[in-house]
Length: 441
Image 1 (cartoon, helix red, strand yellow):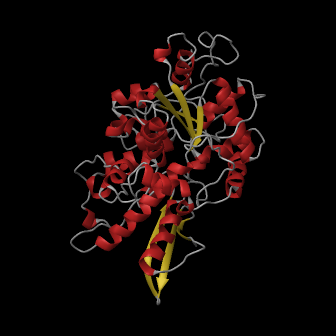
Image 2 (cartoon, one colour):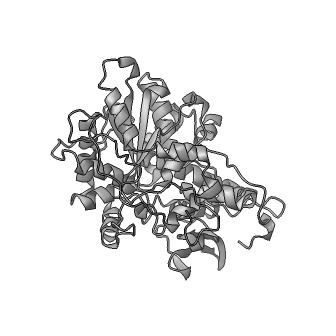
Image 3 (cartoon, helix red, strand yellow):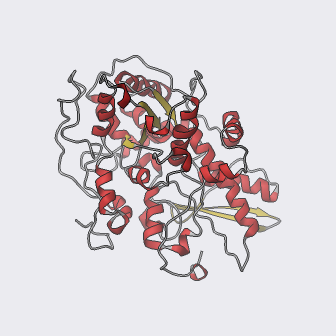
């Protein structure tokens, strides 16, 4: 298969349908008491979209293709069913971590407030047999804080001899894979090395939480609920930290749409439950987000931190100025009439050649949620989701006492070797493409 905009001969990205992708025809139905014999409805005609093709062709190997096909609801129910068997040696502690960008989708779809949607989702998952449900916002805290520090370090090290700027920051695995496999070393050298929230959450669950519960990492089955299909690819990409003893941080990624489909076929009259935290019996009392219109807002957080750290300027409101189009915007800091910081945010495939992200309108518009039956963005639902997300209280990562506690208790200090190992990554890259000195940033 090949989409009309693809630059490759063949697209090996797995075919899918909107919210039903990878839900196997022999996956168990919640309508059946015996979870092994029921089945979901059959898949409709599969489609490939332009936004899928940033992680295609040589970007996905045949082996990865097989592994991607296993990232589905069937795998989730397999573990649930194993936990019902008498052989306790095969039982696993089932943990689900939910991305904050997924919650507005559930709120809009089920006509609930975002807090009630969070509690409904948590209660439903626990009624299936999930033991813990976490919010990934705390993992995004780490990702943002480490990105902030890395930008300041790069800024101070930058010179004609050592081009450490610009720094490209994205938690979108499709863009990262595209940079690694297509753009190569001239670009990957500029990618921020801070791990994505999903990768950090994997370490939090399989390392910190596992130790708290006296469990080995392989005894935990960790599911991520995310708005985007490419998060499935990210689960396969991530390196295996020594602390996880060969266990992946995320064992399975399900899109918001896949979870919603399971909920629609199940019993939604279950008792709501508060979201768990990594800190004993403490529960999440409210939903918060970071300062981004539809994603985690790395640009705004890094910009504010850099302005204060490098120029002692307090920036409350980050003002965006459209450049070539509304999806390519610039933020600048001026001091004494001179521009001292220049940041840009780019959304959409056409802008990806110039800067950062992939998803038009960010994570809220991930292909794993807010889609019409014919595979296009459901604009009315997306507008509703954007309003819901905007109303979620913003919490800056610097204000989290739990994060500071984890830096000391889990990572042995803010700038420790362990923090560097756990919170940062390296990138594969091809030795081709333009030299970084030839790129007009």
